[in-house]
Image (cartoon, rainbow, N blue to C red; front, top):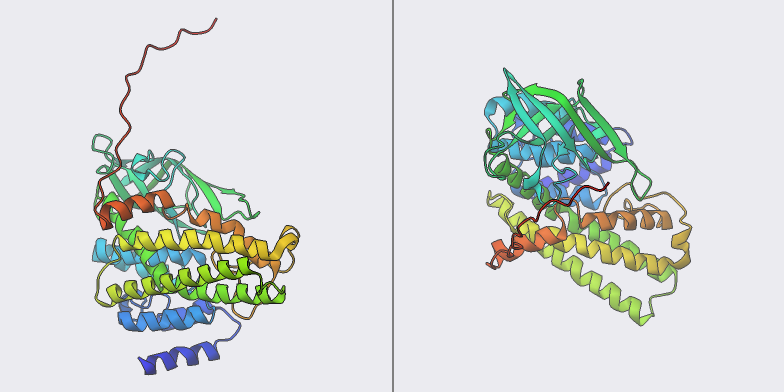
Length: 392
């Protein structure tokens, strides 16, 4: 591993100011564990861990934000659940950037309760016809494809009538509307499907098997985060400690206590990440443990960014400098420790307890699948009374 680590460090040192994504793609490092025939590098799990450690520590992103959807989530899922023909058709174009994916899971009436989704897909000859709406689709305005959970069997139980379809967005019948969020950005979108179409063969994991496919995908989303997030959080905490010292708050007993708590949480996340890496090295998919990690990091980040606001004081109301380019890291290593970078990531931290599965949902998964606790009781059904008389 020392030789490979030296190779990665040399690559980082030689990396110029140009397109980082292209440089990574040339080496197959955008999808390092994928087979070379699909555009990957065929690295071993241990080599992947080394690559993640060095790249994340240097503040170098693995491609664009949409690559998290196309490579880390969809691509890894397809390698395990899709046909070889579908992998050969899509994976190389995802790595090359020709196909840019967004995620189509949540709906206005189906967020945490994903099984309640209503977008339907019906067969019409050799195509699926989609009608309905998706919500909170990050990066959909930059994408030309979307992996969509759709109801393909309305007679089946909620979890059993869902399929994952690959749907082109550049077609009549698809409308993408950006949503302006609390930070002023428009990264989220709502997407409307009005008789949109996709080929009959573009189903990942088989028709009506979408629920288990989605669980595999979410496991990769949460599991891969465990590899790089602790490194980012450790760097962010060092920046916060620098900010505390700059403002002569390092002798304040309350601030010291809160910083110490953050340090313990980051070390806990690091240990969790190492355990996840060990599972990947053993060739295992991320399991329910990924839900525990998602719960820990999202709740931690809400608290540490609130501490940063207290350290900034009134300066948090009039932030200066550049906002952070990252969702859950104050800024790149070496960048100025600006108030704007802290406030922007603080505003995003609350969303971290919701997207990729809310904290309440993660607690349910941990309780049931890791601790063996019984499922939460469902509220009793109540009989509906007579309809009220219309007003005149």
